[in-house]
Image 1 (cartoon, rainbow, N blue to C red):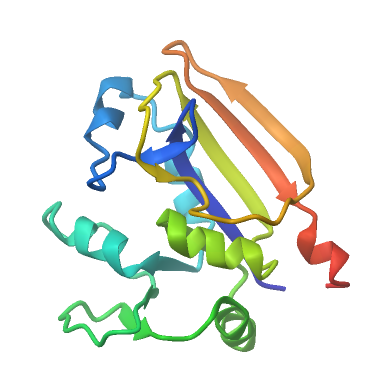
Image 2: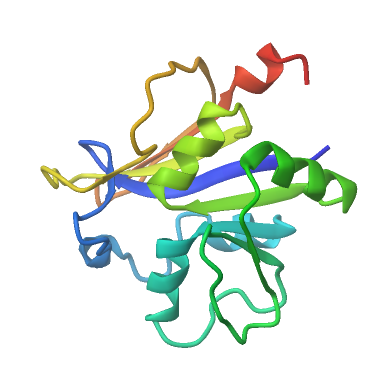
Amino acid sequence: MTSVVYYVAMSVDGYIATPDGSIDWLGAYEIEGEDYGYREFYDSIDALLLGRRTYEQILGFGSWPYPGKPCFVFSRTPLSGEIPEVTFTPANPRETVAELRERGWGRVWLVGGGQLAGSFRESGSIDELIVSVMPIVLGSGIPLFGVSGKPDKLTPIASRSYPNGCIQLQYRLDSRRDRGE
């Protein structure tokens, strides 16, 4: 079964980026030799899902950070790209999860952004949330799930705290189970 995992960092007040999409504030929480479980998580995934703005932001970082992993970029507008692992799609979350299931992929990383994560959550297509809560209040920005009014029950799986004040929380979203999947 395909499992969609939203693995993300956010501020205490629920923002994953500043209003202009910057995540530079995360640099203040780097600890030498600590990756917050990123490498283990990355090695466990078969593919990635990104919104168009997140994709464009990642391109600005330099070399493509996800070589060898299939990436689906959600965009209603065709984009050009020369990264062989990237496929652009206008599909909705449920169609995408069905396609991933057909391909036999197990664990898939929903990279973001918040608007795409909100669409996946609204459709009941997120199975797991791993969020690293950083000890900062941004005051405004891009929310974890964009604008979404539907509540979801979360079942705790694990939590871990770090010396810099970061707390990583892992939850199962029960909305998928409620749909009988």
